[in-house]
Image (cartoon, rainbow, N blue to C red; front, side, top):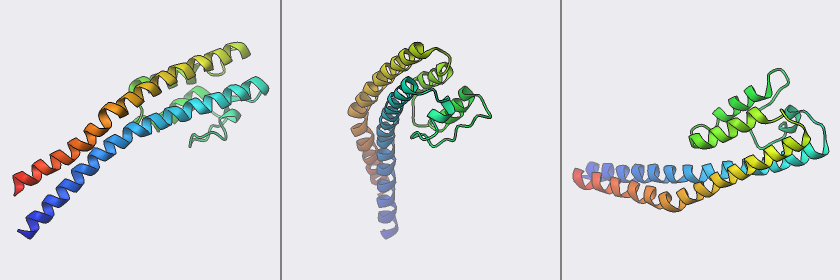
Length: 156
């Protein structure tokens, strides 16, 4: 009997943790998108006032990726995005991938307006992420706990 009780408690705990992890994934998506927007605003300023190469601009960014001059920037950008593929949704990845392909391909005015457009697109994704947090976060937490309780009741 003690073993069953301990097993039920463990199942409830694990399922609740799974619900909380799904909920935190929603928050992580929003934070990452906000970080990209902040980084793009910084990049916009750097591009406007200096003539650094893209590799140098992203050298000290929030991204845990080392950009180098040995490989084209767009390829490195795609490699960097793979780090976020489990957290960001496919639309986020597509927007950021498109950004990586267009960075460094235009003159100053074109570059600044492209970055502003991508900031706008990412802000839209941030709004969607917030809506997901508002609607799904509590559901994931409650569902995890409820599922664990249901399995525990069946075992008892």
